[in-house]
Amino acid sequence: MDTLRGASLVGATLTTGLMAGLFFAYTCSVMPALKGADDRTFVDAMQRVNVAIVNGWFLLAFLGAAVLGVLAAFLHLGRAGFGWVLAGAVLYLAAIAVTAAVNIPLNNALDAAGDPAAITDLAAVRTRFETTWVPWNLVRTLTSTAGFACLAWALRV
Image 1 (spheres, rainbow, N blue to C red):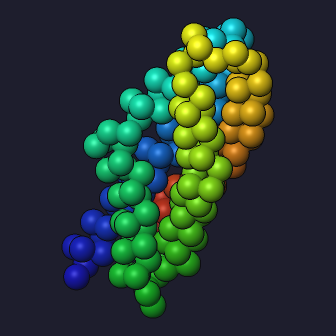
Image 2 (cartoon, rainbow, N blue to C red; image 1 turned 135 degrees about the vertical axis):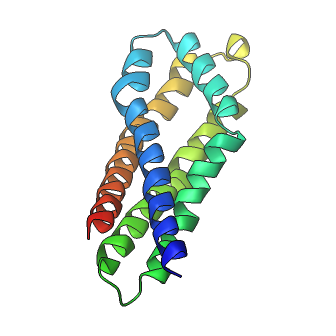
């Protein structure tokens, strides 16, 4: 049981850290870089990202962090570090909730807008997406990073 307990915590920490890093990369590089792009380039790039990101590696980390975090919390019940593991899992689950409630619907709406070459008001499509997606991505960055920190501290405890 100790091996499973430790492996689940290491796995949760690793995958949560990967997701925090992904969200952070969007916060500090991808979205600021695209901010300077014209509307067609922005919409086209984000539509392409929305397709490319749905792959096995991403899903393994995105869902794996949640599953391993919850498993690690369950296996640490009554043990040292339980509060840190639970906090880490809950914070990452908050990032998933934001993703499901805000970011994915915005991604879907952007994709549904169609081919950027055929969109009549690219500026409006971009604005509807960008003005909400960017700040909520920052929320995902902060919650998943805090979750990663809690899990890392749980490893120490």
